[in-house]
Image 1 (spheres, rainbow, N blue to C red):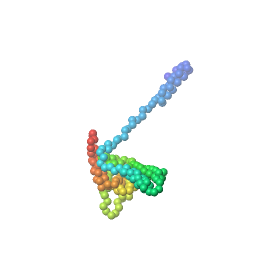
Image 2 (cartoon, rainbow, N blue to C red):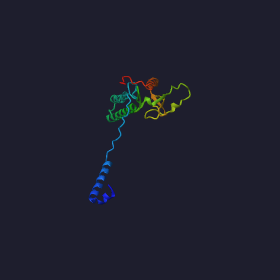
Image 3 (cartoon, one colour):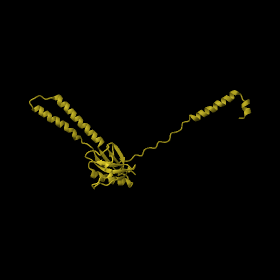
Image 4 (spheres, rainbow, N blue to C red):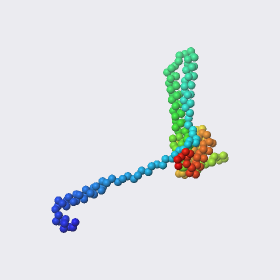
Length: 206
């Protein structure tokens, strides 16, 4: 449209055209932009369990009732009366403490090694993220990995467990750990080698 057309045109028509153009611009601004497609996380098939330690046995909880039974037998066989409130409170404390201790051990000190993953406590590491497994130290001088932090949520290797030095893909050095460290090292080394060679888990559909 020329300047002459705009001058000669009816002001109402010009205003209507401007409003229409503005409406088209608003429609373009309100157009919904589709979100980028969500990339699904790659799930690691764990495969068979090669090594497992529960971290704690529930038979420890039985110590409480055994102690209560022994105290109760002494009370009954003795000349005095049976102190039921004291025995009940003592039993609840002992059993409750045992349950909490076993539950914490099974949660934070358990180990499960599968064909592709290693779980230490509540945290799981893919074997593909382990670059190297250090050999056992049979010498007198300590190795660097023996002072490294432990895998899992605990800072150090739990009591009555021994560590296996590993280097992660990030370059960090850590210690995998288990009670039966000899068998654990063997199973971990073989599973890690299979992952490095690209062998799928047994029973996999690949």
